[in-house]
Image (cartoon, rainbow, N blue to C red; front, side):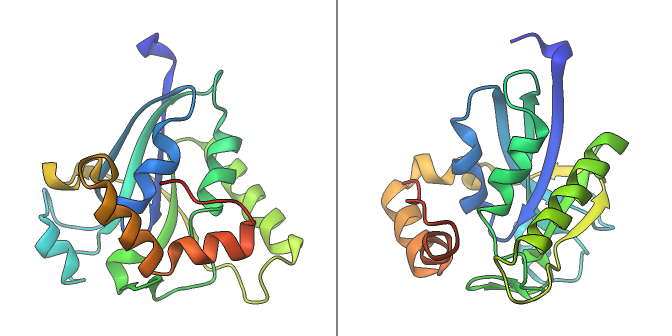
Length: 181
């Protein structure tokens, strides 16, 4: 893949373990990294972010070729991984570090994210307001190695977590698609 054509997308969707796998095998996606963004501390640890005092959220940063997988498709896939009406976290992962957000890297991404949010709000799919924030991209700090590609390293634990946390049932209920394993 021609590195000069790669763009970045950054999404917070609760526990980053569950945000890697849906994007990881898509054509045109070069890499998906678990990490922390949006806060004030530099190089935070998982333990620090979990305290909720750093201002960071768990997020994924995706490098992608928009000719093969346009940003609009990333946004559509993102919305299908989260409960965009929950301001207190995602599923069983509660607190400020598990809030949802789209971090835009360009004005075009900001515009596309805002438009996709308006379409979701207008769709009537949810009977509560969409609370996912759209924010400018900030410094992104990769998470510790044990959090990278968790679904590949621990497939059974990942599948159980995704199901038991409530994420997989939510996806099935609202998007009527089978969840990935």
